[in-house]
Image 1 (tube, rainbow, N blue to C red):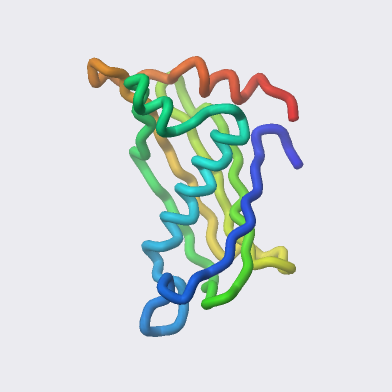
Image 2: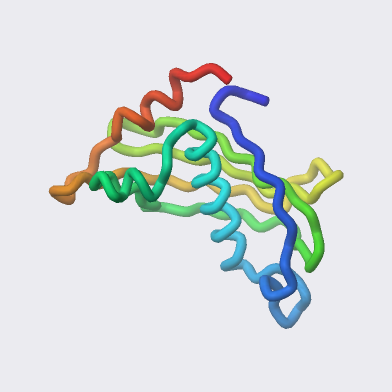
Length: 135
């Protein structure tokens, strides 16, 4: 696996599906967010602990291309890669792939920033360190 990349295996639950029998499009945002939090946890950063310290990570833009659908019981992998986008922004490139397949069912670019206690955007040094780490 590449540096700054993470994979999380999940399974679709019945209640995540809509009347058409596929995962509701809004549920994919939950999958992506959970994968980002797990990525940070794997790197030693706890999303809740950062918030309690006054470092609030937030999504400021989400670009999602839906290319296929998951159904109840499907196992899948959320692949996430972290990049620094600018002095104040970070980017997660994410894909969702059904277990055993190679074609991405969803591709997303999630842009975020952090806001400090004073409400000012900044890039915390903890996130900058993610780029320097070797797996």
